[in-house]
Amino acid sequence: MRPAVLFQECWFAGIVLGLLWTLPLSADDRPLTVRLASGRKFTAQVDSRTDDMLWLRFSNGGGSLLRPIAWDRVTAAELDGKQVELKLLRDVCKDLRSDASPKEALPAAAAKSPPPAPAPVVTSIRIDAWLANWDADVETDGICVLVQSLDENGQLIPVSGTAVVELFAAQRRKFNEAPQSGGWMTELMQRWSETIQPEQIGTSGILLRLPFSAVHPEFNPGVDDWGLVHVRLVVPGSGVFEQSLDGVKLRNWSPVRSGMFLQNGQRFFSTERTNRN
Image 1 (cartoon, rainbow, N blue to C red):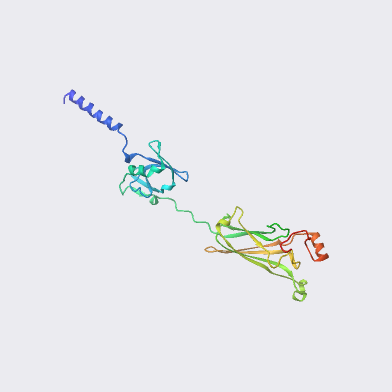
Image 2 (cartoon, rainbow, N blue to C red):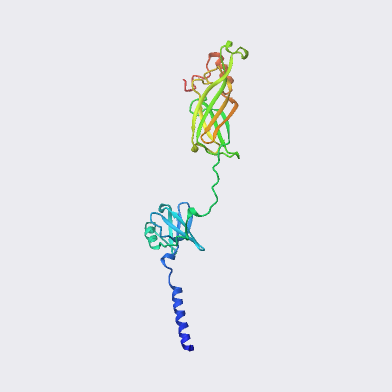
């Protein structure tokens, strides 16, 4: 081949390659960048499956990974370095849709990922209880019981179930009914049943406010100052868990009220408001 002809052919091939090099990317090759409501950001090609949902295709080596995204999760989009209005995003994606070989594209769910950790289960409970007043009058209203549902590592976890709380205390009966204890008998004073929901749990556990009812230590002097609280937590699928706490105060120490009760049988002054005035 003559040098002049060879030169012309090389020159023509160079011009063609230069034109191909400067041609813009096809719509199928242009990546779309989206930001989601969760704050995550993805850049990938828009797959042909895009319709009711946005499907992004991430190419890696010889394969691709597909990720579906709900339209309402997209908070911002960018194409070719320019922002895309969200109201126009679906139309833009229709023009960007591209396809991949079925053998190459793999659904996101098919990607290998570590198995999820098993959900923690309750293995024990811990309780605390104290005398409390939670309204505007002066007398105590009942007891607060804090229930902590714990896993095997002692970590607090939310549960659904039922808590049955029993309060035992010594009460004065007829002398002949308990002559060895001077007429005092320790027995069940009150029982409560409370439904437990996961959203009730706080940073310290589940707090239950349990009011005194028929027998109120402030108005029934025949009840001892101390009691025992027993909690039974029934968690479906996990079991029944129990704890007891002794030495729970049922009546605050008050020498003035005790002296007044000996004088006239009353523990409150006439100017003090109680729920039984």
